[in-house]
Amino acid sequence: MANRGKRLSTNVEGNFFVDHTCINCDTCRQLAPLSFREIGEYSSVSYQPVTELETLEAYRSLLACPVGSIGTIHPDKNILCRAQDSFPLLLEGEVYYTGFNSEKSFGANAYFIRHPEGNWLIDSPRYVSRLLEAFDQLGGIKYIFLSHEDDVAEAARYATRFQGTRITHADDAEAVPGAEWIVNERHPFQMSPDFLIIPVPGHTPGSMALLYKQRFLFTGDHLWWDRDTKSLEVPSVYVWNEEQLHQSTRLLLDYPFEWVLPGHGSRVHLPSSNMRLELNRLVQSFQGVKAPSI
Image (cartoon, rainbow, N blue to C red):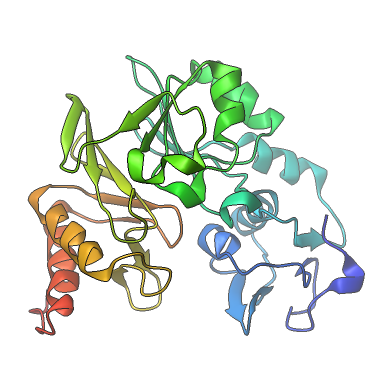
């Protein structure tokens, strides 16, 4: 839990605060961008929530924080319970953001898909009772798709609890001992009519993306939305092979999608035509070619 004695001086005065155990993972800034922003090497409270929705979003950030760095001076148990009950957080249709990000994956986002042929967990949140209860109510977990070696977190515990099949690429398989399904393919393949697995080596050798219903692209740490530049971005540090990273990103131009749902970085929802323009802009930047304006 957050410690008032370790409260960062960069917080504005008020109920919510961040202490110096923050790892600057961006989780709180994604969930409550009005209340939290990056100041120096940490996230801090830049605006104290006023409305009920702002307060609910701040409590969601408190719960999702992977290291418990967010606290309140005067906790509101009612809104805290509402925030907890809102996870997994419905994004659209049958796709959810799980919340409860894990320190073991440096606060990476994880997602859940409810599907009539078996539910999917994409990467792993913390192993907490709220999610166990929710996943039980939603029909369990059949597949656990692991986008790359960094965001495995508690996947083994979820696999044991729900008898789920962990899917990982052979080139990152050392991070998933005993994985039930090891992908050896180097090219995209259709696992079922709704699910396309797309190997995207670059950040790591075994990075993979998952395209669901040609609308939702789960990208791990391969591709995300930058809130400041309002553009799609790929990693520039911690990159195994930059050339393959760029090739893998170009490959995504072959597929329509409307959502980018990353492990790190912000998610974004755009019309597929706009998404393609943004992706094309990014790909052209690899070649030093200025992309046309939208």
